[in-house]
Image 1 (cartoon, protein in one colour):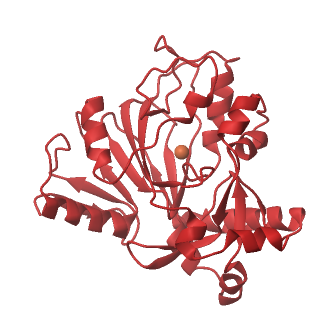
Image 2: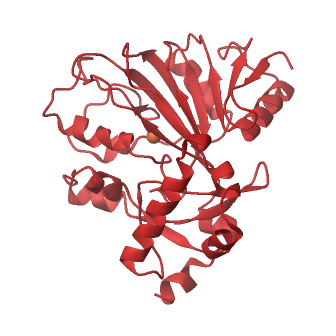
Length: 303
Ligand SMILES: [Fe+2]
């Protein structure tokens, strides 16, 4: 292996040195990188000079790429190609979005703890976020280790969560920030998706929580009780001992495992500074219920 691995904690988040992501890796080298990814969940690649094509090529080695949900949004002129999620605070003119911008409001939902694309039937496997410019203060991304959080649950709670399925939707996380300007087309294009509350992270064999602010309710549970349980689990999973906070540098590429982490972006003075970030997202291979062998129709029928 030609690159170096520098763990940030013994089991969560690591920096990867001596690696230029523009250069195609051998299969053996890529396998070693996947091992590090499956161990640490969050990998930081500092000082990468990536073109859009180089980010796409590296990302695509992990699996098929998603296309942005912005394609369902009317009147949005994309700054980037459809395989990028534009995580910047910039408009098509490359200037900060104004205070009354609808997209600015929508994007502020990224300040809530979430995992990417849990509102899609086949959710994300991993996300890769590249920093072209950053604000001088604020704007960190925080990551929560959901495998460690699962290990930290009582045996009773772990047993209680087995087989539970939550309903996730982008509308739910946006409702939490007071945004509800979805059109009928957008609602049709982004229906709610069922996701197991716990799952096995296949590439490590470890059990993990699977949570996000996109989760609205739990099938078969009273609405209030389901919401309370989801809130309790998110509070448990985001205690400081499970969280790594990433202070960005220009040209950092950070990738994280959406199957077993949550993240959130912290606030910054977004009307004044540019935070130009672009994300590629790799799709998982199947819905979580299918991965867990849960028959969704039985769960729906039991409601
Ligand atoms: Fe995100």
